[in-house]
Each structure stands twice: as structure tokens, then as C-alpha cells.
Length: 243
Image (cartoon, rainbow, N blue to C red; front, side, top):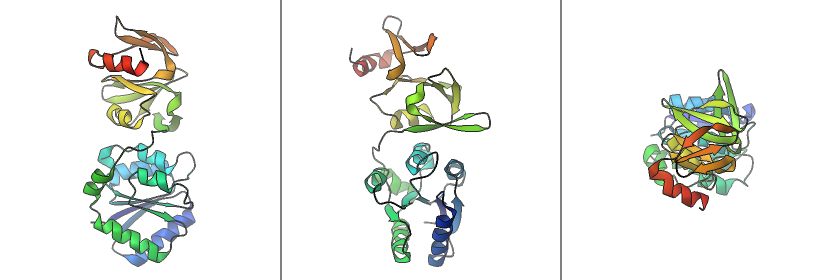
């Protein structure tokens, strides 16, 4: 059943137009809107919408980046992209979108998309249609009250400490990341990142030394902070490195 609907678009006029058209189609919908994608992530986690209308090209992060910040438990919604360009359609459907609307959305086309959403049971539908999408490009991190969007290429490794994920950047900085290592392991580029231990994912671009005898690696710029490689992961890690 579709009751809670969230619209995420950085253009207030586009948000207002889409909301008005949805109300005209069904006054019973509970519709919320977000023009800041960072705020939208928290709204999705807390409110659990049944249907998400999502723009793609937005400042700071794209709609694709936004989806990458949600673990499976927070993606129990039907996804419809609503954007000004048709060029992202293939990538959109790789993100398990139910439909793809080009702005300005015609009322008849919106009615068709809404009917498709009603026929899709959100949890079952997304579970059936979620597939391998393009690797994560950015990750949200926080330093106190500030939210940072870091390119994953700037992260030397991720570690888990007391159920909290820490991103260690290329400058030696540490940032809290709200995503679990399990989620990151599925979303990151597997040619660059490897989960060498249940508490660590490393970026091969920053690898300085692999000590096979001690089952540990050293990364730039962390020469005095060895990262363990578990015995269970050691053989797979050697294959990853090509040694």
C-alpha cells in the first residue's frame, strides 16, 4: 500500500509542482518534501516512506549517491526517479527504479507511475529487483555537527570500532561514517577495496606493505598503524593483490 510519499529535489518549484499533481491524483497521500539531499537521508531512515520520487542531478551529492548511503533496511520503498534529463535512464534502472519520469511531468504520465507504484509491494518489490549497481563514489561522514561528503578514493581504509564505522582518509584524518562495513563491502568498488578482516576494509591504492608472516598490512599515511588480515581472508587477499 502506498501512503507515505517523499519527494526529494533541490528545485523548490519542481517539488511544489509534483506535490500539487500528486494531491490532485490522491488527496489521501501523506506527502513530505526535501530540497536538501543530506536531510532527505535522515528523513528516509526515520520516516520510512513507501514511495520515493528522487531527482538525480543535485548539488553536493546526486540521487545515486543518496541511495548509496542507505542500507538495505532503509530501502523498503518503491523508487521513481524524476529528473530533467533522460540521459540517466539506464543508470536509474540499475538502481532498481520502478519508473523514470522527465520533468515537467505530465499528469497522465504521473498517474500511470503512481498506479504502477500501487501495484508494487514495496518490501517484496525492492527485494526482487535490487541488483548489482555501479560502485559507490562518495560516502557521508561526520565530524561533530558537520557532514562531509568524501570521495571514496580519498579513503585509505574503513574500520569498525565498538559498532561504529570510522573512515581513515588519505591525510590521516578520521571521520565517523553511519554505514556498516557489511553495507560498504557491497557498495564499494571490489577492484579497489577489500575486506581483509571483519573490522577492516582497505583501499589498495594506499597499500605500502603486506606482511604475510604477521598477517597485517601497512597503509599510507599510517606507517605505525598495522591493519590485520584475518586467516580466513588471507588467501582471498593474496588473489586480490595478484601475489
